[in-house]
Length: 112
Image (cartoon, rainbow, N blue to C red):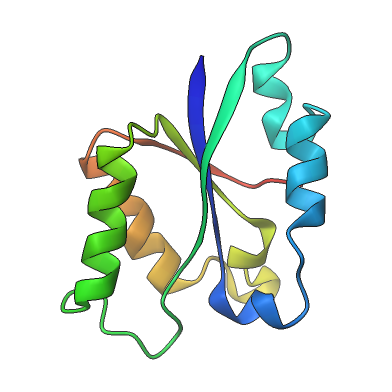
């Protein structure tokens, strides 16, 4: 069984319910099609700590990263909200993704 988490942009909480990410996961569509016919356990639905966060010094983010490892997440999907379209991926999300990959956690860019 795959143990996954979804990481989203803190700003997106102003308009996002998470419903599209979860519906796409439950229907095994788009980036979650890779789990077709496979059991998946959603271990976390978490958010970055915001644009102004100093990611190298933020104790809260360090705790989140540690927790994701501790609960045994195999793969983290980066929500569509983390891609700022014309400006590319958010630099904070890129930093978090690198930390996850260094910890041996697969990172998939995209949800729905």
